[in-house]
Length: 500
Ligand SMILES: Cc1cc2nc3c(=O)[nH]c(=O)nc-3n(C[C@H](O)[C@H](O)[C@H](O)COP(=O)(O)OP(=O)(O)OC[C@H]3O[C@@H](n4cnc5c(N)ncnc54)[C@H](O)[C@@H]3O)c2cc1C
Image (cartoon, rainbow, N blue to C red; front, side, top):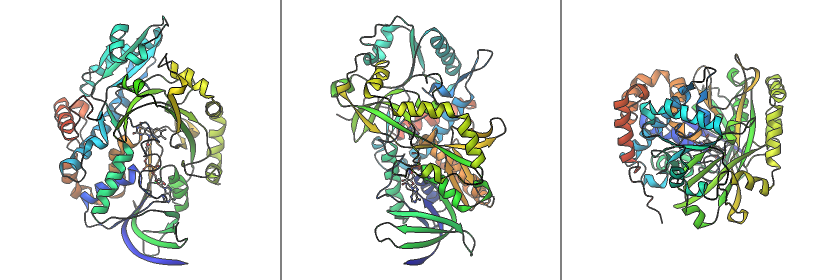
């Protein structure tokens, strides 16, 4: 059975952080536009955006060592760190605008202040961290960062990590108190509540099966109602494919030239979750280490204080792994099904290039809990297996494409907006830095797909995001003003958590 529905202005596929953000931006910029959302699961924020499926780090390059690289002359390149920090300031401003306008409430339900730290061991790594600290602390975006290689100071900052440490190896850390823990699941749910209150029709348990050009212009989306089994056809002038790992197969169905020669490489993950309240209480930071040689950037180990379900929690990981699924709730045929004649060579080239990565990920899947405990003990020397459970994290699908610098089948670690030349459809691929930079990435979607509206929308965008179009690293005063104002609006001033 099928039925044809009337045309709408916008269809958002997937109820994750990205569709939520794009919907919320559009509701402010073009409130009269009709928006429909189709999500195959029963509620919003259940895949990668769910609080248990990602690490909840407000990525602002305050602690992630892979955003700063050492150049051949020994100096530190901080350009990527600056870019990511500026992008996170954009998210903070939009979230603060939504709170100030009373469109979402209780910011502490989704964002909490938490120190961000980087921790390294060994002479070479300590020297790198010191140089990195010097390069960053000269920049206005990273003001307030501290460095220490004094074990007594470190014991004050991270008692759980320093207790019982017997190694003589030099150890050092940086710490900055303005870091955040973001519950992207809670934020996504809040944004969908807000969208529904503004008349957006959100259809849960509706799976998008096909997307093709509509005869009236725009796109026709074939949707299966999972409960009734019926098929519906909806048309829209603009479609956003925000299916997370499920975006690539949907993008391929559009047949647009921009969808060709692109593949996806799925990476799964696991976290260790502490269940001993005494251990949880002894730690108060997100502490990022250095990726092991040969390990991909998304497997950097970190020990994180998190706020989930209004409770302070402690998570370690993620341990990366290999699974052929593109979504946690996906199918074992996702990877093979994404290989098409147009991306076969790209995929094969990546397969050859990334053999060692695949081997590494399979080894990670096969790790025993005892082996995982060994890795945890590099952070918490006194850790006991009985204090920790394992939870399965979300799937990331890294983009594979042909690039000038990397050649055929190059694995990408960032996010990528792919859109049709006429701006009528866009998809978000890739996973990193992820939800933290959702507002920046969705503004990129608007710029690519609605260039004709940007002049009209600019004043409203500037009202919501005063730093829009400005490099905050070069405007220390504006950065300070924005950072203080957003901290105030998002309740990030008080240092002590309000939870029990
Ligand atoms: C282990 C891990 C750690 C991470 N850590 C961080 C972090 O610390 N900080 C950070 O900022 N980001 C992090 N990320 C990335 C972040 O989680 C993602 O970038 C973000 O959640 C992506 O949001 P999304 O809306 O694109 O996708 P999702 O949240 O996955 O939402 C996509 C939705 O689309 C639906 N869908 C898919 N296909 C269809 C279809 N055919 N029909 C209907 N619905 C469909 C899915 O069911 C899902 O609900 C991490 C990710 C992982 C996996």
